[in-house]
Image 1 (tube, rainbow, N blue to C red):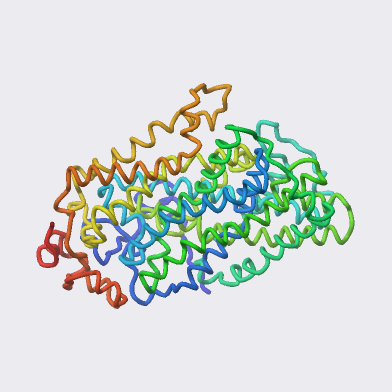
Image 2: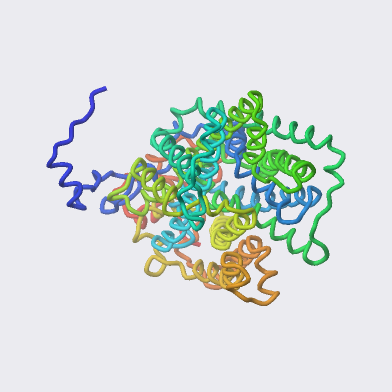
Length: 563
């Protein structure tokens, strides 16, 4: 392959001029000519609508099996509940988030457009950027968290190969939240992962196959060893929750919210995946399958962590801490087992970052800054911000901190999920003007590009939750709030999601934006051909439009009438 030669003048120009970083302007299938866009925002072409029910199930199977899922479940035990409470907590929490995931996933499966475009219908062309930024931030947080976990895998692997690695003196202050060994491992993980993030996931299929096979084997083997080391499963099932009375009830709700929070971002941007669905109905398999696969993976962590309480005297909620015990035995078998188990989790972390986190953040950046950022540049920027600016190793410092992060960000994403679902199912009645979603001056402009109904429906549920969020992040010593605000925060995701649905629907019914209410879906046949027959039956009248040349209003006049 011939490498492109870059002159000294070009390098100098890149570092001294912002305009030198501008990308060639792309022409979207539906966006007006004066709007900067990229092809990833266009409706998914028919040849790429290949996902079946099995594809969706396989995606969740590969994406769910990672250290984040294990730790989310195990950390529930670490904060005071037993396995009896942790398992139902996971089932209920995952089911609660699976409902909006299916409701919003249906939008992508039928319309074949991404999250960043769909939010135009409910929030308005410019207010949608707030939703995109919110999703991008959480995607980068997860990119960093998975990287911090992956760094621990590097430490275990290098220590298994060279035990003296862990004896490297620490030269970092305690306030850094990481040791010299940890920083070396983290840098190695980051630098190895970086080029993989720049390769399209379809060319890394071998990684996902290894992940789908290796990670479950490592998880089951770890659980088997822990049960054996604890003397069987008898003592495990005798463990009781440390919390009692009302403290127990509120702790259960708080942990359930942390489980839902772990999927809060996908409850919003699930259309980014379901847009590739072959059938509009295939994505409904997520409703039963997601709670099942998440709970199965979580149970492995819960049982294993319960065992560690028996033989270690404390909950080891991170499986890598168990592998450290194997290294401490200083046997060749223990080191080999630790190496291969850590390698399996390492591949799982990289695979999750490629499919779920890096691409999501990069896509958002291309929407926010299409003039300068494409997918590869977005992946690079996300890797730097997630890896170093957000200091993710501090989030994993303790189980309490981890759960606080998981539950905290859902304060902002839950109302967005609720507004999206209410807009599509209750207000717009499953009918969008798809070309207008790309037009800043189309019917979804509302007032100054902002739908005030969505703004109110977002702010009202978020406001009462902010004191609880401040307490969760800063701690009781810095923030003092009353018991009611504390208890409300324990089920912040459900509160935000449900209140946003009722508020947005009520405001939209009382003060309807009539131009946005259609009797039929408006399609552009040159961009969307070959929809499934079920989609065509629902779509209503359709006529072809010249892509990117007609304004949304011109297309609408001939295709559909407002209610």
